[in-house]
Image 1 (cartoon, helix red, strand yellow):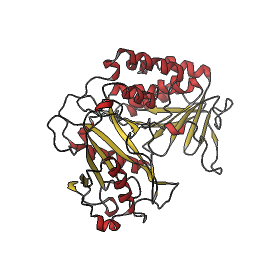
Image 2 (image 1 turned 90 degrees about the horizontal axis):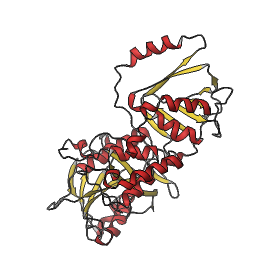
Image 3 (image 1 turned 180 degrees about the vertical axis):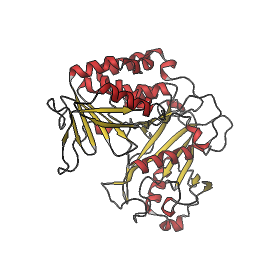
Image 4 (image 1 turned 90 degrees about the vertical axis):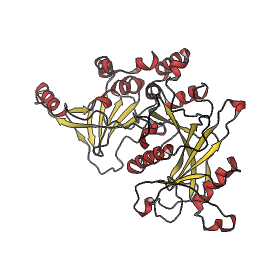
Length: 411
């Protein structure tokens, strides 16, 4: 990647691809005095075989808003997740009201340090890495979603040396850049917000939008959700009343997290199988598995997703039993799935990033499920559905209590 000024000549603006120019015009409304911001550009564009999906990341100097308690900061805006060219070179051509490309661009607001005159380029690399995940997985982000990164945000550029604990990501609406219609479809702006591991757990066990509201009302991030990578305290540690608000939210509402991408798989079992012997054999095979492969993205918009296969022609297979295998981190989400979802009459899905398979737990009250009380283990490729009765869910919640991280959130 290279850093440069993208010069815009009003006389020759018609030469600029319409998708790019439309985003520039939206940014001009917020930054009329910065028509040519410093920009990180991919040396070899993605559509020419380069590794970076984003063509550009523009970096603006934002003075903040003293009246709202918003400090000066750097504002980063991506160009590349939406259709910039309208000729199918990256994204399928579209028009409003359909989404342009993935339907959103990423933004990021980094606290400006005293005496800092140029924006650090590392957020652009972080945005490229997240964009690679979006392109490879096809996952669409929504406000309130989270991405479990498990490493300092600036480590993507190999420069992390500070004491901060900002290792995870929440997704919010950008407070200044609004959704608009480009010539190639609708475009929204989703802001990356750096958070601590404890705040991520709160988002998982409760909901991301609730945690974002708490961050907005705190001095830690403020109403525009500025990220300070040197931050060492969570909102729970900064304000003792926050933990109680989160605890009450978890108890009252359960979790809005309904799916994670994880390292998991399952095998069919038959009635005549020695379960203990089978379990011991699998344990020997899985003891050395890598434990750091959970990549979780909550799907806030998928509260009532299609639980059945897209094809009515895919056969339904009824199973006698199944053996599920999760790596340690994915397993740590199981108590959340049971207590925060199933016991609230909802569903939860573990989507394997090893294959296209998915394991969905459903409560008996979930509509559209193919698993039933009579046939609780059902497979319809690529989905395995497991219906958990109230009694089984209660038993699993007790047995999995050792993995429950919710107490770390509220203590």
